[in-house]
Image 1 (cartoon, rainbow, N blue to C red):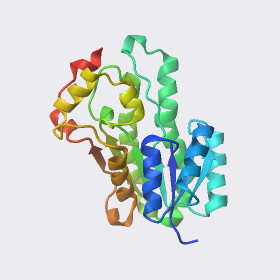
Image 2 (image 1 turned 45 degrees about the vertical axis):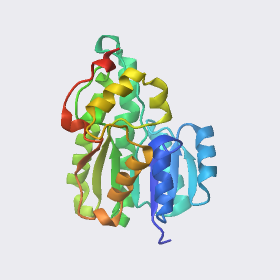
Image 3 (image 1 turned 180 degrees about the vertical axis):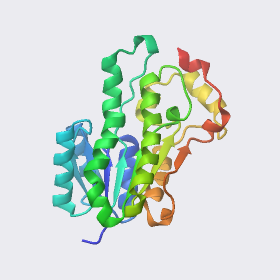
Length: 251
């Protein structure tokens, strides 16, 4: 098979699903991974025959090994790994117990590590790409994000490690840090005060869309970015450049 294959984790919804759709538009096949089996099945049905669904909790080493093996049995190759799966569990430092800390780290950080290890041999064969999804919260501190922000900062460093160690095999590794994105979840939990505060703090004066983040992801996985590796791209409407905390997020 010569058609390129992308493996996207957290593909059942949000940025992962938008990325899956864009890969397909650009002629790729996609292995969609998610631990929400029912939602994943619906999403895979909607996007059509260019994608196949694989149930997987990326924090579980055995599940990762099994899923990647299934992807390779089905597609025969992996050209891009998009580590998008993540959990957002916010709370103050004093109220973040170790169980919450580990729950966030297990998916957001351990999952990236495990998926990368499982796919590296295949990516060597295709001189493939790794694309990790961190967050603006990994670049700048914010209230209530002691576990989440720390996990995403670690993903940024892990990306640089991947680029440094795997470049000799032709594998590129980059990281996208989304800012506020207009997802269903965000709109459900962001109060009007928070929305207004984000708009005021973001130079482009708006939230991003899932499609806009997907455009950056797919570009960095493509041959158009063939000399780009070890980079951290904030797709955030300029939010990181302002460097200002948002009091509305403290509530």
